[in-house]
Length: 452
Image (cartoon, rainbow, N blue to C red; front, side, top):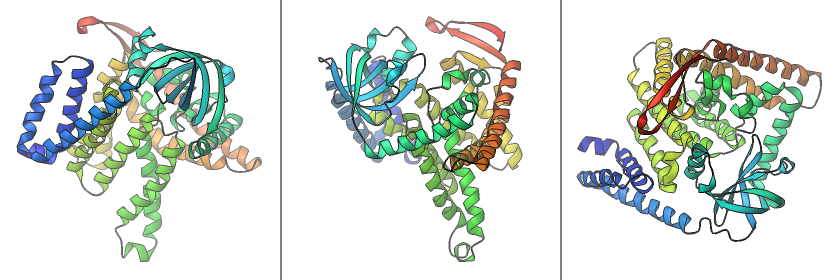
């Protein structure tokens, strides 16, 4: 146990914060588990100090944000828009001085973007007034304390850096709109630019094949983007004798590859899932490159502890749970498959990761794709090695002036990605899916059907 405390101190910090959160929001019985971990930490004073620092910080954040939440007495609210979504209706996630609000708005306010400071005329209702329990839990997990319907909205000002990035994203999305078919445009906006406005129009095929994780900017995206530029820069710097004689090519290539990866992270919208995925994948990639495999797990728990420290409600966020657990599974599987041939290792990695993802898919989507490991083994490599490079080329093409060459390049990119979507749709039609409905006391029933 002393060795575990010494090797993985942040694992115990994370578990302490996890049980602390469960004791606050679920049942006080979990406080016993948190107390046992605190007692265990006396075996390693470093872990004890970390637990004290993180728990006191979590207590500060919890008290600070909950003291001022939902004190909305006026019908006028001023806040900064931090997310925009378009489904059956337009909605804004707004950060104000008194807490976060989730506001539904008429379609005429689609000119409001992320980063805008806006005056809203709205009647705020408590989160408990929502009837959709799953949506209510999601809003609760990201710190939302109230909802409302916007009657009138007016922009006040913009935040320079955010508004600049948003204008860049909007320029790219406009080029996608003009030059690409709707389905390809929706897919790239969702899976590549992190815009969830049109995800509902294309998500069914990906849910049925249990590959919906590629529709949100995640560790998979960051990993493939980093890998693509890593191998590119590795080949380039290996041609320069001055560099390869003096420096470690892996270190040089990884540092250079982090620059475009970070640029992609900024363009992808810097949403909460993207921030978490970039942090986790960054630590994972660095630890693997520098042979710090044991520390990669500790680094993952460090990032998880940071998120729990800032927001104890994160454990109710599906994105956080899936991102954290799948990254943990990926690290453990990657380490334990060391020594296999690269082709065998890749197949085993994808299959095992898909199997571990099944319970999460059942819990959050109510569906279980029987052959999801086969679908992931074919869809994920195509996405990473074909779609991601083509998407980056389309990103570069979007800044070209209008002309025959630009139209031709976009047609080629549209053809490639369109065939990818047709392939996913074909898999969805032949997939066998179990639809699972959970009831109280963990009872559930199954309905068997073929996905259409």
